[in-house]
Image (cartoon, rainbow, N blue to C red):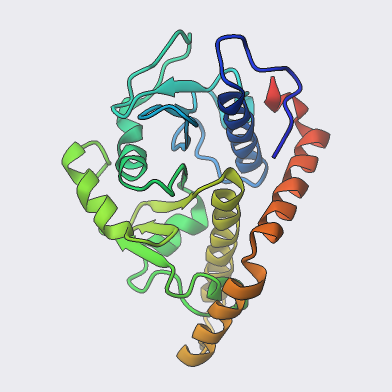
Length: 255
């Protein structure tokens, strides 16, 4: 967890301020790692202790501009809660609201349109078991068929059904989505999912015969990840490293 440079505003709980600082960190890190899509797509967080309230990026700001105070609080329908000068994009919250409402564990949700992620989303088989990084997602990825731009509220139930209990949802012909109970777990999952997709795109571009990992080995490695490398302490160590990076390159994220 990161400590805020400024104390929480008088009208805000310490828990909300902590969530704001961590969500702003996610946006800045996504910018640094080139996961952004200009002003579009979202990373959202449930406001601790507030039923049906969430934090989202101000519509129109680039992700490298986002700070803890600029984040907008909204309700489950994407309407602003409280006084904030920044606009929001309610239509863009359709996917996030569906999952936030349905899953208590999905307190944090990240959706991206990266080149590698979208490329893999267009493949019939999606992410392939081609390398060690990809194997941490073996049997942990769900897929949702493309229905057009996510503006229709009636798609929300189908999104939730597609995700099931997995932390990753590949939106076919669209992009990637990861969830988690914490900012660290959500971002960690997207970081390595994006890397797995980038490696797959590079591998397929070579035009050589592929050597897929046998199914029994893939299952074995997935269990290894789950039992050793998937420990929350490891995720916390990675998150701390990410935050130290921000302290060097963009410490104003906590403003």
